[in-house]
Image (cartoon, rainbow, N blue to C red):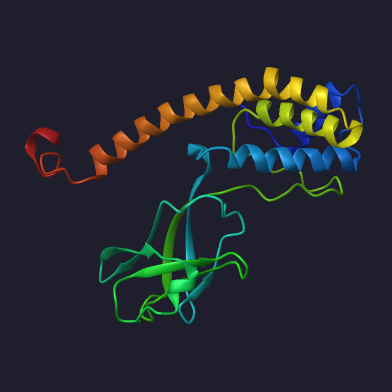
Length: 223
């Protein structure tokens, strides 16, 4: 399956706008593309946006990953303690100050300081499964050769064009038509397909890594 870059998206958007200047910075177009990427990747808990990051903890605090999507709840935060996995429970940042350092395992996210805080002093490394959103493409025209998270950027391209028309031409009518006839149906289709893939993945992970009693790997009929 081919992979696409930010440059590929710019080329497609420019082409559908009747332009050939995709390699040249065009602020209105490139801002629209960045806005479209953010909206698309935040529209759903995409399976291809799941990421596992290791966070170094210093004085019960560590930096959030640059690509952490703060609009989505982390699916798992844990540490390995004495060879065992210890999960952390999220609490509101306002309540975090009242937790004891020797109580159960809790964490809070501070999006202003872009940090994750834990109530424990005996944890040096934290693991976090989360949904990522890509960093914006540079408006300078360089640095857009990295691969997109999704394998098919068609929806991003369509939304980019719609946002370009809205922001540049102030054509709300054309924007609404494009959203309703082009972008939204495709988005809904992609979400439906991704949910099916996620169910298959969750079933696989439970059957292979979850402990349901009967599915332990030591049982002879699973060997």
